[in-house]
Length: 201
Ligand code: VGL
Ligand code: ZN
Image (cartoon, rainbow, N blue to C red):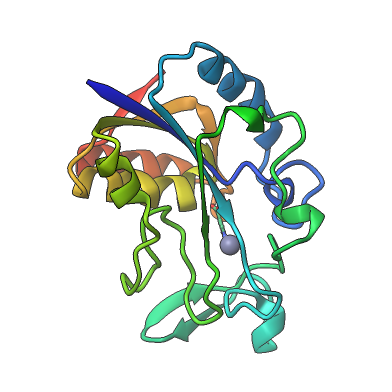
């Protein structure tokens, strides 16, 4: 059985001091490095939030305040601070993450009009990123998922992995929530369990 590790969005803007800092984000990095050192994965895929500077998920692009929700192409869109702008320091992987272990990188959120929490597809389910094809091409049957943020990109990546037919495991010790509302991380775990994600640790 072939296994992949998917490392979601461990980028400077989501880490301590970043534009969209996830509380205690940096604590996932040593855990993820240890997993990668076990050398038990056939593929290690990193996802990277990679937005144009005028992305429509940014409050600034729409003249809105951070925390508001707008309608974007028919679906609700939370207004984020500018983050992970292509080519900036904030979009780079954290320097403590062992990036040399990655066998493939998926960049997402590149279309100004659509946000993309999942590593598999945008939030409107309009375009796939190529992650599913990559994993299936390499005969991956099981995926383990870690990274940031539990209640956004990790959650949607896990649920799409199940729906694409992969046995899907979340490492609870390898993820942290944004918790815009304090219960968001907990609710995300329940939604993932209901969808058929196995939660480890
Ligand atoms: C993310 C909010 C906006 C994430 C990305 O990686 O969880 N969250 N863009
Ligand atoms: Zn984003």
